[in-house]
Picture 1 (cartoon, chains in turn cyan, green):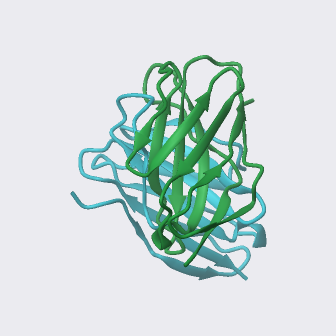
Picture 2 (picture 1 turned 120 degrees about the vertical axis):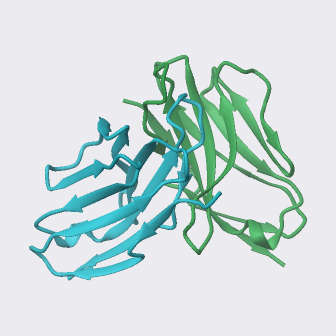
Picture 3 (picture 1 turned 90 degrees about the vertical axis):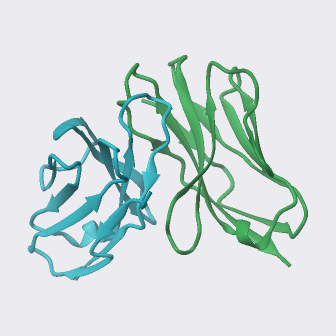
Amino acid sequence: KAGVTQTPRYLIKTRGQQVTLSCSPISGHRSVSWYQQTPGQGLQFLFEYFSETQRNKGNFPGRFSGRQFSNSRSEMNVSTLELGDSALYLCASSPGSSGGETQYFGPGTRLLVL
Amino acid sequence: AQTVTQSQPEMSVQEAETVTLSCTYDTSESDYYLFWYKQPPSRQMILVIRQEAYKQQNATENRFSVNFQKAAKSFSLKISDSQLGDAAMYFCAYRRNYGGSQGNLIFGKGTKLSVKP
């Protein structure tokens, strides 16, 4: 099976712009989670989608949003970008059926906000 | 709130030697899962090993094994016969078992492991 894919791999934006990141999960996986990774804060959970519904949400401002499509692909959107949004954004997928299942991560999208 | 602490920001090991990475966590839950993930310089996060809290037996995966001490809330990773390819950031993670598949991973800050030839 193909792994989790994320596009684009790199992005440069300026403050105030908005950005959309895409994640395609492993075939058959229905759960997609998003994490933000920064040197200062480490890995922080953004949100999780399962069957097109947001099931879990981290402590991020409303500028961060996401959605999931019927084919389980997910997008996350960040509006009104701030310098502090510069980070590696990781997407992870899992079957979505049990708490102990492994989350498989994509290679990430590196976002730089100037 | 649950927290995960990795007290060793950096570790170094000689090739073929054994190294242990430490992880402690804080939770009031009794049913949860613990994971070690590896993130090489290429950035793709890979699962190394997982442990179910209700299982007393320590998990092992080839050269990787854990020492799970539930009462002490400790979950260390031992890497035997270290190889150059083991060099990476290692993250300890916790996930509460909500009875379904809900529940996000809570990560520690990571330990950067260097392997010397």
